[in-house]
Amino acid sequence: MFKVEEQKSIKWPVNINIPKDGGGVKKATFTAEFELIDQDEFSAIYQDGGNDLDMLRRVLVGWGEDVVDEKGSPLPYGDETREKLIKKGYVRAGLVEAYMNCNNGKAAARKN
Image (cartoon, rainbow, N blue to C red):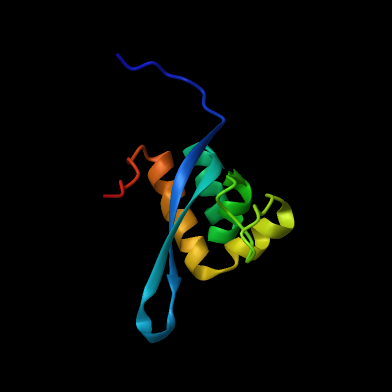
């Protein structure tokens, strides 16, 4: 049985590959909260000249306490902190991939 439910937002793991000197990456994970939007609204963002930044401004509505500052203190979600993070290419890439997987019903990759 498939029960159709309206779901406003969902918490989903985001995998980030942080660039390191020498061509390597440091892997990090955090929990993002996304608002799931329908295909019409999603398409309109890009058809109206928008980009991944605009899409994330629309769908990223929060994150968990696993997003911390340099001292290890939780970084509260807000417009200013969201902008700083989504403007970093490697963070944006992870968020876009996580949202697409979440919205398309693709299970998050599990850690071994």
